[in-house]
Length: 161
Image (cartoon, rainbow, N blue to C red):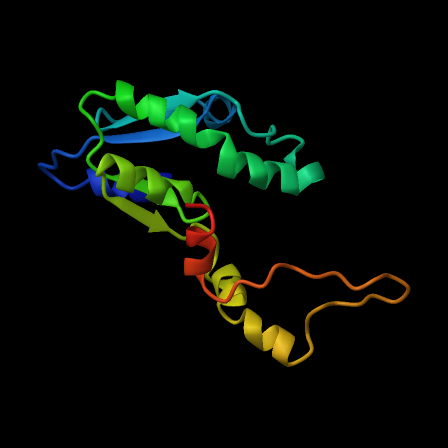
């Protein structure tokens, strides 16, 4: 997403100003070479309200829950402080609350799938996995596990608004 933002502001005579919002932890991870170099891109932070990048894999459910419940109020507060104000919100599709927030504040939202095309294809064709018996997976001696079946990305976005 940062590379995409850099491409947007690289056009000659552009008047775009991009604000990239990350957690305080992530700003530290990015380093000065990533966060400097363009007057057309500015970085702003929200508090570390999601589990640390260093431990989040240990409890992905907690991480996803925090993404969907803890970030929005801090992001909205940051929007109130931006000058000039935001005229568009670009967000990862997994942050579905940005669509609801944009609707409430009358700010257009561009939702981007930031994972690989392979992951998108897996979600898109999920019905074929179950239909052809490739899911659920049953490993020898282990109980079968199931995942909430979502047929469309629309289902992901609507369920959190």
